[in-house]
Length: 522
Image (cartoon, rainbow, N blue to C red; front, side, top):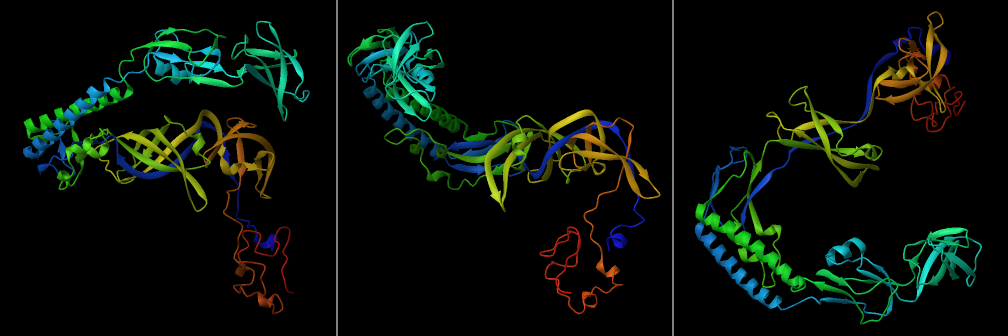
């Protein structure tokens, strides 16, 4: 069967010349176009719209009339905001009497091992950058960890500092191969690199540290020094600019936001209308029938809650018609090869065959899974043209690797084993056999062509047979149009070992087709 039916005499080899060209690999996908950088036109909640003058899809210029407002609702909103400002002023007066302490004390007894603050430093900044203003040692010990299996708890060791000073230490703990050694905290520097018994090097740390912190003010003077012994009442730092508490600063911020809202309402009252602040296309128009249900007093409760996004009502969204984006799904095997800033090619079939240039602007590292496949989302941004509309399907190709002046051959011409790749450089038309096998080193592949790094030269010719999807054949050709195997099997047509009469996979659900044909039955 193999000799008579698996091949045909009509099959002939293809030939290809090794050429020089460019090759690249890409990550591709498709998605829908979406408008980018749209701007929401909003009004304070509680302000009512009299009439909208634009519809979705309208073109507008900066300064065009979008809507008129009910001035009485604006006046009511102004009254509410004024009441809130009055309440804040009373709270500010009360908060102005609260002061942050102008001194920083140790709080507990210990030894000063690190001072991060200097005169003139902002307290909050120092704590943000270092985690503390001052570090204290509480139990009188510095510690060093080394990797060794030569010590036991209680062993005495010699610890030498980077300055050459020797200290006698003691092994306090052994965890696996990690040995912890303690020495006095009176002298050795925090963070110093030390040597243990002239054999092991590591960094000193505070065995039981305490972080002295603060949140407001400016350092006026440092009142302590390294290695100084301090008590709980010892002043470590003195501060300036501590006249107002953090609550006072928060109230000032809230008042500034209310002042901005007040100015917006005054402008609305004077204009009686809302105008476009940029040119573009109206992307959407919101239903404003419920705009009066929320009161401007929702900006602040009696406890002065900060402004939230729910305190404004969007009436119109404008697309500046400058950029669009398309998001694609990327398989987990490709996501790590993508980087923000990579170039992309985009085609939009509904527009035509033109290719548009874009840039990868966002990679969402949150995975989604479906049917056992894990994918991530990548977003590409491109310049908008007049023909592009939101919702159009776009195909995206992101180049992740490429090379110029590469030696290229068709991918079908390269055969591969588990350890090597090779091509054939001759073909015998009489016997139909390929010959002169040459081992090659391959590089990039784009699915059609493959890069040859070593083994061939430009102008060489390779021969190959076109790949096929399988070696299946019509069994009826063997039986003269009769696919009933019972005549061959002595009446027994039990092929339970096969899923069907297609032998293309070389193996059914049971019978072994690896080196021959094994069938159940006769």
